[in-house]
Length: 301
Image (cartoon, rainbow, N blue to C red; front, side, top):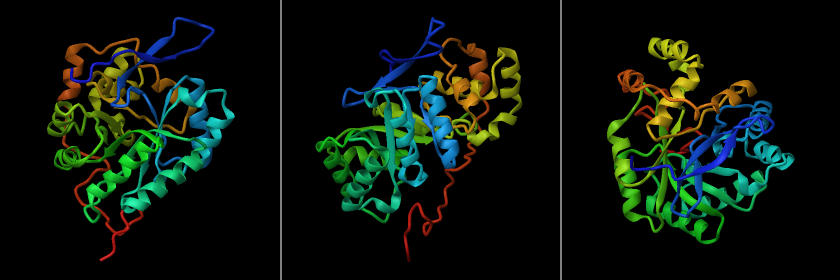
């Protein structure tokens, strides 16, 4: 595979009951190791976010994904500060809103995210959505400045098409490390995935569980029964075996812990193929049309 996983970065399990299961990583341009499992935090209220982060840290997650648009960075920062986990042992990602992609706003957004998270740097900073009303060159120059100042270790994009990603690669002064996209068995996006792999851009799966809609898929349900796993574990395992970093979110601490149990078992080849065949080209959030006036973009006429 184009993104061979070089070595483990963290172990999942109960320290009192070894052996522990190792989580593989991907090496980014800075040399940082990106864990193949992260905690997604979209659409959780403050209490749910705090509980989810605490459960993840207790289960030895080493990767947390947030964004200024999620409005939960301060809660995550408080949970990290209250934990016994060293900052350098957690891979922390945030994103800048599409409406804030002009040069000064990118800098200001990053500094504000760092303040809310209570940290001096981000391991990864992403353009949350492309914004055709703002120069991508200007945005990427600001991202390069953040990297030069040591405020971010790596930069990337989110929800970029192959066309948009190709342009970003062409004009960026620093490597585009990641494209975080909607990806799950119902929305597999082979052309985009192929381009990411051709350009050594790590793929992260946002909404890897199709916002739970895929739990009703009969093949997923059948495989969950066959393997004695949850439906979430089946879908996440499929993505991991596609060499994709997964970012499941859950308001349930039990499910947060359960979602980590992915790395000590395998799907049979024929079962992976059955899930491959579930592709419907059906997104749950990344639809072609946009509300350009909404909080994400804020583009007036």
